[in-house]
Amino acid sequence: MTDTAYARRWYTLGVLCLSLLVIVVDSTIVNVALPTFARDLHASASGLQWIVDAYTLTFAALLLPAGAIADRYGRHRALAAGLVVFAAGSLAAAFTQTTSELIAARAVMGVGGAFIMPATLSIITAVFTDHAERTKAIGLWSAVSGLGVAIGPVAGGWLLAHFSWDSIFLVNLPIVAVALVAGHWLVPASRSAGAGRLDLAGAALSVAAFTGLTYTIIEAPSNGWLSARTLAFGAASVALLALFVAWEARAAHPMLPLRLFRNPRFTGAGLSITVLFFALSGVVFLSSQIYQFVLGYSPLAAGVRALPSAAALVVFSPVGAALAKRAGVRVPVTTGLAAVTAGLVVFSQASASSGYGHYVLAMVIVSAGIGLAMSAATSASMRELPPAMAGVGSAVNDTTRNMGSVLGVAVFGSIAASVFASRIGGGSLGAVVAAAGGRPGSGADVLHAAASAFVTGADRAVLAGAIVVAAGLVVAFRAFRPARVAVSAEVPVPAEAPTEVTAEAPTRVLETAGR
Image 1 (tube, helix red, strand yellow):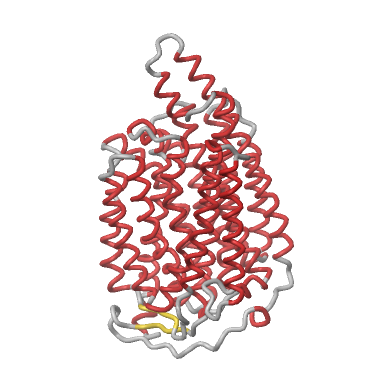
Image 2 (spheres, helix red, strand yellow):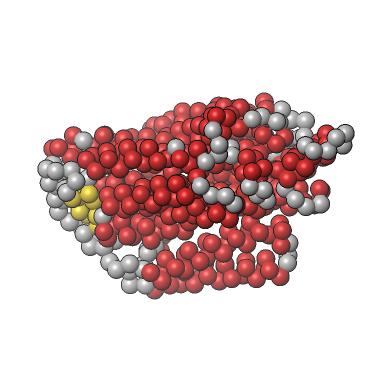
């Protein structure tokens, strides 16, 4: 690496964090607008879930092929292309008129996000060659995720209070423009010098499997959990997932080298990240609706009330990284997962009469735990791989993170919707609130019954989430044993190729050996 590139590394991190911020904000800014979509677009409960999950699903399903493409053709190019596609999807979302159109536009945004996120993490690994600096950079990268959680609800609430809902998508455009211009000058081009051919069959199988699984879970409340349709789609999704694993095990150039998972620390880190974002996305999805539909806050007021929990996530992310450095990864990861479990249990004890104090306490505990564990688990995941495998490592890391988010919204939302439908007789909370607003006299009783049913459903969903996180805690405790497993014994990789960096930022290249 040239002296110029080395001197610019922290500015490079700034551009990468800005690129990450815009895609994280988009996932949280939409949550605060869900009641608005229910009212203006007449979105059903499953429609609201798809507005959220169309983004995270395409995001998660395409991360692995996006990482492979970035390794082969250049991570800086993948980052720039992802930003352009994300901006195009944002522009389309702003002008949609129906729920279906919005879901499609959100899917396009997810395609862009799939190229952005792994590129940011793999470029960090390539640029920060010093272990201590890399750990610090990844800690800051993780903290930005928490900052996005904080900015999204507040920015979304403010925009909805002053403008129409299309503004929450249009706001992405100037941010993307800044990231593209700054990235042209400050982000070095890195690629894997020995990248093999693209695993198109593996990419197609992974997309089909994850899409089928998410569709099955989201539509199960309306189709019936034990209906022939649900069981058929579920069986097909499992079969596709098994076929994907079998294909990757035999492929000459697998998109997902399964040998990575022989390393228990790498596997434990990935599982920890999955359950963390499973819990975060699911509980944020439900709490956003509780704040507005049950507690009666406006979008802006609901966003402001999400600040304490988001601040806890931001504060505890660097604490988790520092604690991992001093006491080892096991301490912050297991402590964080235990805190998330406890926070979810507190949340699940709510009743229809519970106020904001109950929910904010639970959310702060959950967010503090996620902050503690997230940066430590991310750093551990990347540390188990040499820079030569930065692309696949970051793609796997981001895939586990986003599949956790997809399943969190799908599972939490589906359980809550099922309980609600069984008590109210169908429909969504948003539809009941809208209908009750026009009923003189009996409206208050209907609203109280609907709120009680939704809170009960949310309690059961969150309690189920607590059980999942507790199981992840047990796995993480066993995976992160004090005796470290050597990476070379688990994942043999070729030696790194020489690094070539030119003086001009747009054309300099950092090359690493392929996976």
